[in-house]
Amino acid sequence: MIHERKLKSIPRGIGMTSQGTRDRLVQRLRNHGIEDERVLKAIAQIPRHEFVDEALSSRAYEDTALPIGLGQTISQPWVVAKMTEAILDGGSPQKVLEVGTGSGYQAAILASLVGSVFTVERIEELLKLARRRFHKLGLHHVYTRYADGHLGWPSQAPFDGIIVTAAATGIPPELIEQLRVGGVLVAPVERGGMQRLLKIRRTEEGCEEEDLGGVIFVPMLSGLT
Ligand code: SAH
Image (cartoon, rainbow, N blue to C red; front, side, top):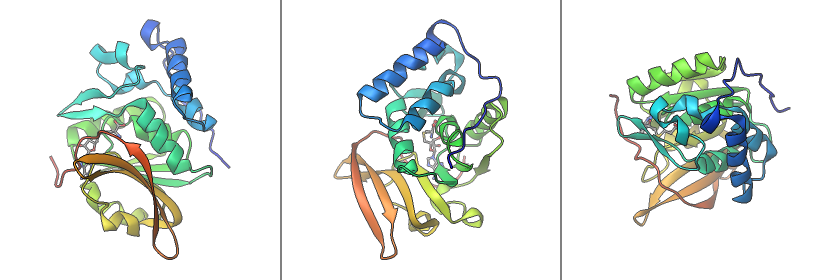
């Protein structure tokens, strides 16, 4: 059963943040290979302009990454859609972990599709802003943690899905350990001077890996700031 969440008072927006502008983004994602209708519906519903600075809101529905301060970015909508599609994997995961809350947009998209979202961020200032956005949108089933995401969220494991939104040289073994057998982890990983988006399924025997293509993410760093 997929969770159809009701969002609290979604600002419909005007002009460049209107529903029409959002629908055009959805059409673009559809044209670029995003097939899961549930993901497209979530992108149409969640107001991305609420996750960027007001000065950038007119660009919120372009298919591009945007700065969110402190050297970080909100991911490109196509990448968010691709990662969400990979995590859903045609099924209905209930419990998902995200490493790298950033603006909170990816977590909000997940929250409209899965039972509960656990998201970890190492920059306190960004996490505070993201929490405010979850509250404003009534996303009470997004649980946040100020911590180094390399360690995951052990007390909440196992997760049906794990999404990493910062690029590392390898997948931290702690994250694989916190994924249930049959679950999917999706993460950008540095390989040969490039970043590849990997979809990893945990099996009884180990892991199966699928390369979803080249991406550009900010690096995964250690410690807290
Ligand atoms: N998912 C975010 C994308 C944010 S960019 C969004 O939808 O906006 C990646 C984020 O990962 C940044 O906020 C960065 O601070 C965070 N990050 C990097 N290394 C991390 C780590 N070890 N633990 C937790 N968060 C980390």
